[in-house]
Amino acid sequence: MEYKKVAFNFKDIQEYQHDILIAELAEIGFDTFEDTANGFDAFIIANQFKETALNEVLIGFGDELQYTYEVIAIEPQNWNEEWEKNFSPLIINEDCYVRATFHEHHPQYKYEIVIDPKMAFGTGHHQTTTMMMLYILEADMQDKVVLDMGAGTGILGILASKRGAKEIVAIDNDEVCYRSAIENATLNEITNLTSLCGSKETIPSVDFDIILANINRNILLDQISSYASVLKEKGTIFFSGFYEDPDLDMIKAHCAKFNLTYVDHKKIGDWVAAQFLKG
Ligand SMILES: C[S@@+](CC[C@H](N)C(=O)[O-])C[C@H]1O[C@@H](n2cnc3c(N)ncnc32)[C@H](O)[C@@H]1O
Image 1 (cartoon, helix red, strand yellow):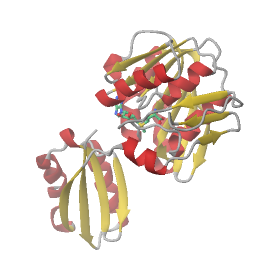
Image 2 (cartoon, helix red, strand yellow; image 1 turned 120 degrees about the vertical axis):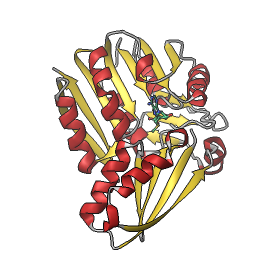
Image 3 (cartoon, protein in one colour; image 1 turned 180 degrees about the vertical axis):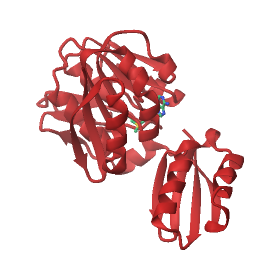
Image 4 (cartoon, protein in one colour; image 1 turned 90 degrees about the vertical axis):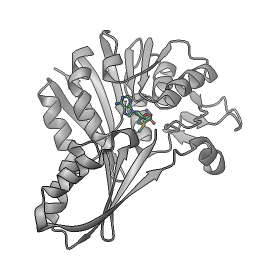
């Protein structure tokens, strides 16, 4: 997935202006923001970036804001190269071992997952993936029908399968991830995972027992109603890809509109994962 970064520099931006601007940028598709010394960087999927929309937002501030900005294309990262350079096998909760094809096989672990990430996200090392894996390890997965939304490498669906899930539908809107999930399922001899390329409109009309979605706050807010409509009564959703403040409260409030009740959440570093129950 190609991204663009818009690097903003401000002269004396007030906190309330900073918050309003971020909220308005989120409305036009920016999904991640990182504060910098003199402003912040805002990230957007490259083909969603429209400079006219950005300028309309900025014009709305009139003379209140003095700023400069620069639009920078972010090269798609070759996660595989990065991973091979830096990756060591990962152990989660003592019984789950994630390794690459070039690492040694260790049969003593109850759940061994082999991942070849190529350009897809999902090796278990990112805090959001780790927390989702912890939820999967704690949950009852036996015979469950699972949706893995924003599947990346397919790591979450693969773990769900190894924990006894009956059927997994993995969906990603990135063609590379869609193929990566198929390849990784094969590497792990998983035969009950179907990988689909698409987004919320691709979700099949199946009654899911469990939904896994590690994406980002804005996409989750946009897709929660679709998840709620295919989740069984008393089914569970595990979300990640967002921060505690203000994202968790926004997600809780939106879930409540669709009869999804907050159960609990985990936090590692700045990242959060949360569990909701239908009903
Ligand atoms: C943070 S990664 C998570 C990957 C993996 N599930 C994990 O937990 O490590 C988010 C994934 O969501 C996918 N994605 C982003 N927007 C999406 C959308 N609208 N519909 C489906 N997938 C999306 C991205 O391509 C990416 O692979």
